[in-house]
Length: 349
Image (cartoon, rainbow, N blue to C red):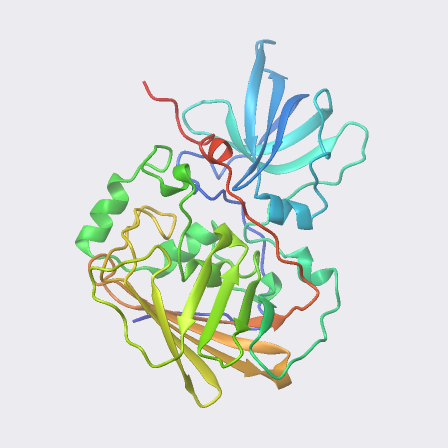
């Protein structure tokens, strides 16, 4: 069984950033500098995009499409719908596509006027959402908003992708499916605004807080995240899982208390072509077991998950981290925009 443990106090060294459609096709080892004029700005999810008219080495005008993080991560760094306007002169550092298409993943942006600070995407970098408030709150229940502190996380080059690349040991079928996957094509579920079910919400909890709520009699617990607007209902009334033919995008979750620890068992996932963003599918055999426990007098919770899918994953993956009680954070809608999410796709021949 593979184990991936987050240890408080390990300093994160911010890696090159990643987009939701992964770094496939992008030269993550190189950064180019572009100077030009903004011709379009699209503040939407799952990515904020802008287009830039810049001169190539022959002095010919070329329009680039530049991708950033989503509105939630960029918004927490001060970006709004009005940050860029057509006609702005800016300098951009970006990772270009390997095939020469004028498309890039943004590393930094600076306005000619100097009114905007360098932008660094939120994928894997320290999250200002926690740093903006000196979090000292505590609680006596798992209810509330919880977020991981990026500075305490082990760094995986590539962020979300890198986590699963480093920690998933694949079956032959899983490896073949990953090798055959084209993330820049319509087979990428993101192209139709299909998100990634748990454990993605926990892996991304340094960028998107999770919120836990109980109903009055605690027979139902709801776990939600801004990440793809995922909402999970955990049934605590003793029921079992339905027949394996009844399957759900977020899976079917049942839970129970083990002392003070909430245990959540999720099965019956719908088929998904790339829930880990690296082309490894999941199917009816996927199973996720999570444990949530209050620690440090209610200032944090310890979270652990075990991911199994014998069809595609050769050994279970166990991962643990701590989340900080963060009642100051506001929930935001992800609201994936179909037009924005298809921008990364290569044009069909």
